[in-house]
Image (cartoon, rainbow, N blue to C red):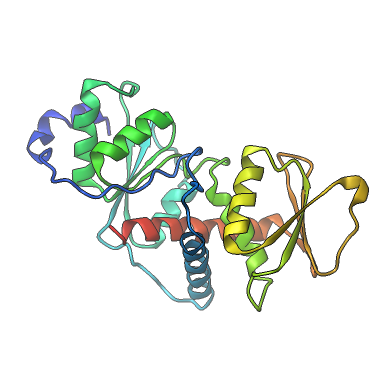
Length: 261
């Protein structure tokens, strides 16, 4: 649906009262410097509960009656996206909102569009939009705004990796060691280090020449920036498990933002 075709028909819906803002989950702002251990732990714990309910055969629809907009520049494909599935499984109504002309920060039409989104939806994911425009949508729409949750680079995927490790810590994560091999100063590396420390893991940065396997430590081999390898004391953590956990972390992030407004 083209936004430019909505505006005249929806003018009466644009008078929106102020709503408390939520942080944009953009590449550069999550985890934010002010993120607390409790906030990160809440997402991981919620993902664990969602996964447990799914395995038990339960049907959870806590987002029934909620509306999620996916802002896209292209028409939706015939294949349902990961984000669409995650929200729909929780009961949310998903709308693919196709943008007409590219949005630019400061565009006079942008505020009207933002207010319309705030009136019609409970959250928005801005896939291909610039960070500046995503922040402006957040500012004027007054609803949770995600920036590219379907992107392979979004930091939420780090929490899915850490969920795999947490599930192998029956006595809790505090004090459990993670040996990190590779460059921790890449964007993904920095996100991982921040989130792991917030959860209470003991991070150890190890050079390959001095690395020795430790039966009590988890190992992250980030020497290949595109393909990290994860090893638990009990054996490798496979990509299939990490993909499964990404689904539940994605659901937890939607649930946390859309039910705490």
